[in-house]
Image (cartoon, rainbow, N blue to C red; front, top):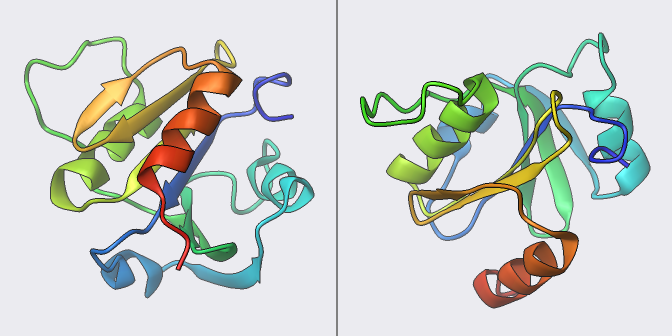
Length: 135
């Protein structure tokens, strides 16, 4: 839905390294992870559409989370704030970030500090299944 409608989004999936420092100042949600809820959170001009959501397991813990952006001088100048924030959190944790571009609708991921752009839905599913172990 987000991709098809070019709705910008940043979703960060916590793994082993705690993201509590980002959760604490954000708006708590503590809700089941669903497509309609993500659509509502990131709907343009909604109060929480800026910033990102943090996902712990199968729940959205918070929305409106603000992440430090990557300061890597070698980054492509065309990368926007969401992409830079996704790289920033990937540089300081083992979290996985999913970014939906509001300009193109393309999906990008950051895993292990590396950004991969224009990811297909099939590649995204495969990558998530390989990197996320449900406990």
